[in-house]
Image (cartoon, rainbow, N blue to C red; front, side, top):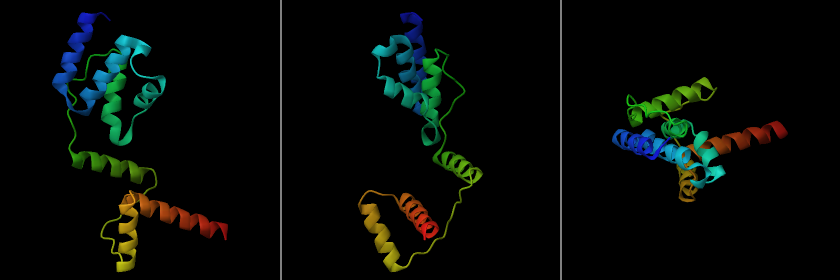
Length: 138
């Protein structure tokens, strides 16, 4: 790839914008500049991005491969991302719960965990997993 092609592809990716465009630009820089751009660890991280970073990862992989940016790509709404995440969760055996009611003591304990930087979802998943492990160990 020559400098003119690189600049043309970068311009197209900037026009697309969003997470895909940002990932594409980074991947294209790695493609064009090689190992002089970023570290091997960063490259591996970008190459394997998925889940809530799927769009960035797709863009990076396309840019790194030197492909033209996917002009039909469009940013997904938060609702679309949540729906896709929920579908993957359920297909992998997870469960989505809504309408959970907590006692005041449980709500206070959860607030303490959140204040310490742990999300409610992460705390509940961790505590249920730990509880299950201790039940199996008894």
